[in-house]
Amino acid sequence: MEIPNTEIIKINDYILKHKSNFTKEFGLELKKLREERKMTAEDLAERAITPVSYLRQIENGEYGVSLIKFISICNALEINPSQLISDYIIGDKTNDDLIFNEFQKNKNISKNIIEYMKNKKSL
Image (cartoon, one colour):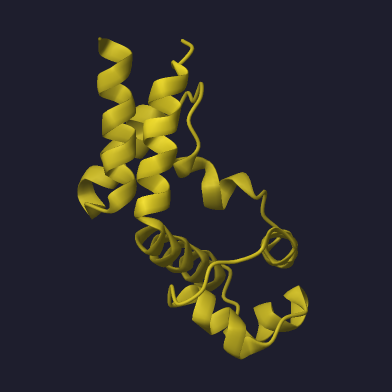
């Protein structure tokens, strides 16, 4: 189902207005993935060729991340970039219900976007 331009603009506007929340969520997800891989912040920083202090600031949600740094972090974690950002991207996803249910548990800001998109699809 194609989403009208006005709806895409509303969603993107929402994301931009809540940028700090997304930065924090991204940092938490990044830290979770790093810890799942049993890597220290120092290990990841070395592999991503970035200062450990900057990596910690990203994980703590203090800073966003540039596209180049994002790719180097994903390479260092040996993950597909979509693992970190798929929850913020609209489009045809086969796992929307799984993601939605997961966000219901966490009650984070991303849930609001997925809920909004799901409601628009049913109209």
